Image (cartoon, rainbow, N blue to C red):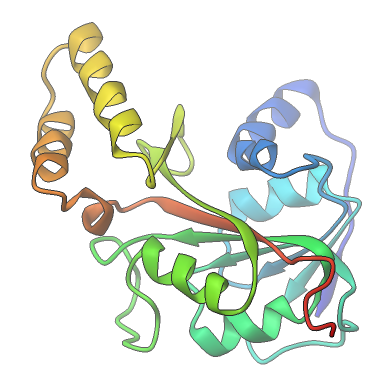
Length: 206
């Protein structure tokens, strides 16, 4: 585990960094508090978390020195099941996990133990007793995201794609997305998705 200190930044850099973590407004409290980031998070995401969190710890692949239930938010990228479970033990009751899922088309490496789709992480968080679970499609990608579309509501996605096509004309990306949506395949082809979930305050208690 390595503590990362914040530094003074200008308004423009702060604005750019804030856009990378717009997902924080999906949480019950957008104030991130004490955050843990996996070592696989990209530089832009780490920088944004560092600037907006009270503290940031980089979680080593095989664990670290953090105490259980010591973090408010955990940020992970394509975690393996064991990594996910180990990281979730660091969350305080009521804390949130944010998982970025790159999808099978863009994921670096081919570790077969990693879940393949956002729906896999949704199912795993449910199994572990988390609630307020949501999955989002970051359009067009994480760094340049202009919209977060709920993967659990295909009607919203369909309307967003139609509006985009009507306002900007045809594009191969939108046309392909609409085709996949019609075949109910879009959730399995999305290359930039995220999943959030909240650890209940009474989890693990009898």
